[in-house]
Amino acid sequence: MNAILPAESVLFVIYLVAIAAEAMSGALAAGRRKMDFFGVAVIAFVTALGGGTIRDLILGRFPIGWTQHPEYVYLVISAGLLTTVVASFMDNLKRVFLVLDSMGLVAFSLIGCSVALKMDYPTVVVIMSGMITGICGGILRDVLCNQVPMVFRRELYASVSLAVCALFLSLRAAGVDTGLNTAISFAAGLTLRLLAIRGRWRLPIFSYQQRWE
Image (tube, rainbow, N blue to C red; front, side, top):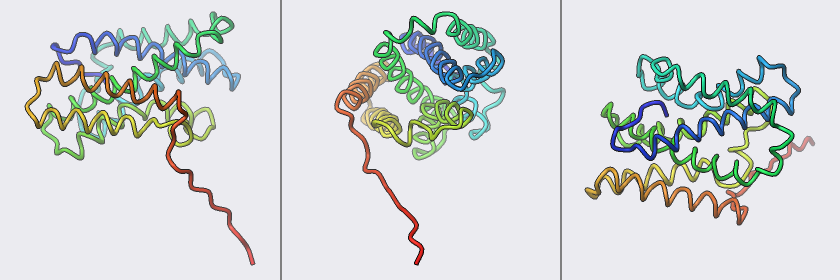
């Protein structure tokens, strides 16, 4: 989430848009919980940059990415605080946010894979790195806002991240050029996520109630 390959400039632009959008979604979640401005800034930060931070800590990648790019911090906190001003106008932008969030999920997943690949981790760790980068920011947001994380109860989300990572590594193993591979994986992942939203696709739900005799 915080390491960008020079050949993937388009993905980098998407990354910047995505972290701003994620910060705004975090700010809205904080607003629904009636947090003060400090709370808004914290939730915006962890939503946008938390996944990459957790990934770097797990992989032993130091220094952590955003510490070397303070402009990311300025961007996400500014986006979060801006949301407090324009929130009343954002109800009509729900679909735009869904698209931006979907783009962020796919972009973060691909960047997470790239980070682990550069560190020569095995395949399963590369996939986990992509998924952690893609979904953990939202999990942190929901936990801090005292909600069951959306990733565990809504349309396909983590599954999309998993599919994107698997496709990216499969095409890489087949010798597909990195730039083309990234473009194909991004387009396929975004399409899958948007179809999941439109069709409300989700995994089977496990429901269990304790029965006392």
